[in-house]
Each structure stands twice: as C-alpha cells, then as structure tokens.
Image 1 (cartoon, rainbow, N blue to C red):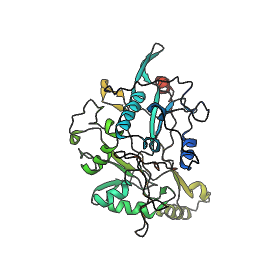
Image 2 (image 1 turned 90 degrees about the vertical axis):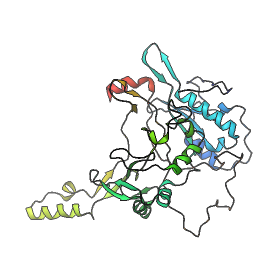
Image 3 (image 1 turned 60 degrees about the horizontal axis):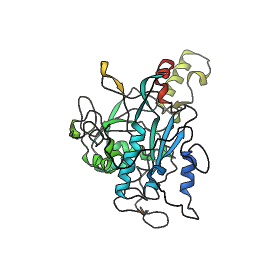
Image 4 (image 1 turned 120 degrees about the vertical axis):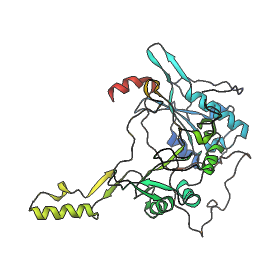
Length: 357
C-alpha cells in the first residue's frame, strides 16, 4: 500500500488503553450507536483532532482489535477533512509490524468498520431490479444448496420482497455476480452505474482494485480480476418442512414399508438454515506466491421498497441535513440494524490458529 503524505501524523495509541468513551478503557460500538441515536439535550463539543473520530475495540472472544469510525460524526467534516481521515483510517488499519517472537509481519487491527457509511447507497436489490431487470442471476433453494437455478434479477427481487419479514426473507440466496464483466462461467455484467456509486464514497474510492492506494491504480475496471462482486444472503433462520413435497414423499414411503419409527426422527419438522462463514483468512495469487490479503466489503441490509403513497423524507418531514457540502454522510447516518456477527482473532496468532483450526 502507498500512503501519500497528508500532513497528519498517525498516532498509534497503546493497545492496552485504547480510545474509549465515558471513562471506559474499551470502546463499545453498540453503546455508541444507541447513544448516537438519541437527540442530546446539550450539543457535544467539536473534536479537536481527526484521530478523535477513530475508536479502538478489543474483542474479548477472539482477542483481536477492531478499528471503528461513525458516518454521523464524519458528517461534520469538510470534504478535505474527510479525505484526510480516510487516509489516516487505512494507514492505521493496514500498516504491518514486525516482532522478533513472531515469524511473519502482522497488523494490530483485524477489521476496520465505518458504521452508517453505506446509508447514501440505495437499496441494491431494488436498484438492480429497476436498472438491470434482465440480468441473469443464480440462486438455490434454502433446503437444497446444490440445486442451482438461474432467473432474472426482476423475478429474484419479487421473491425476496414478498417473503421479507423482520430483516430476513424466505427465498434462496443470490450467488455472487461480477460488476466488472464476466469471464468464463461467471454471472453478471459491467455495471458502471453501481461502480460509480461505490467510487463516490471517500473510503471505498481509495481501496477499489483500481483505487488510489492500489498498486494497479491506473488499471481499467474492465480488466479487474478482484471484483467488485455482489451477492445477497437470506439471513439465518429456521425453515419448516411440513409443506414441502420432500416431506410428503418420505411419509408415504414409511407407510408403504410398514415402519413404525418416530416421524420426528425420520422427517424433522424444520431445519436450521445457517448463514455464517467459517474461520478463514483471505488470500491472493496462487501456488508459491499465495499470500494473505485484506478484503473490502460494503454491507447493506435489505429494505423492502416503500409504498408509493409514503414520502421518502424523514418522519418529521425534514430532509436529512448535510453539515458540509460535498460530504456524502449525514448526521442521521446511524442505523440499529445488525448485519454481520464476527469473531475477531488477533493477527499475531495467525500461525497458531492455522494449526489448531
């Protein structure tokens, strides 16, 4: 990674006393989000340094460190200040260190999160339906992972929104589609409109495969082998089986064979549909050149489209207020939706975890 000099010295704080809140020694992102969602009686004093907008969390379960930033606080910055903060964020996140007792380079932080930064991006399932309705996507039933089928994006979105309830939907996932064109058996197309939305974000524009911090910064997006890609997940849920043809066929077979085994053992009433990724490290290249690498993701929850008679404004009738022109973030960029649950391990223990897991 190449970081141009931006006039701001990056301050690496002691990991034993990270930037906390309310006198605590560890940052709690859930408490911070709940506190930011309330309207304060007294306005908070302005931050004196950009580094005050970065928070460090020590994740107790895995022992790793997470770097946090919040879009509603970045909304108070100018466009130039936001650009400087983004560079400082990635400098702290990606810088690797060397220690005698550890045979490989390591970074202090395992994950960096900018909460609420994707609120200015439209709901992507609905957007693909309106702007790319005939795009062919792959999906599979929830109860049968290997039975892959292809449908158009418009039909997929209709199945998603008609079964959507409380953050989950009861339809198959949309497998990854490429946004920079297809090669071989890939699905997708070159979606310049979606790429333009991603490139407008001050954080994502730096770390795209052709971004300013990439070694291939002058690359044509159509030549990218590293995405971006888009996929949709239904969420973790329990799926009842009492109405499926598979359950009825099993019941008929048991009667014909004269077996008297418990139906709960032979044909369960429901199955658990997991939506979790096992412990892994992302890699680049192949063969002897294979090495671990960082991965950038934009996580956005599914929201069904609003009825035509409702307004797109806020509940009180006011538009979201932007503090500075040129800044995509707004003061209402706080959401209570929890999209992903992650166990964060310390990067210094990578080789030990590789042996144990």
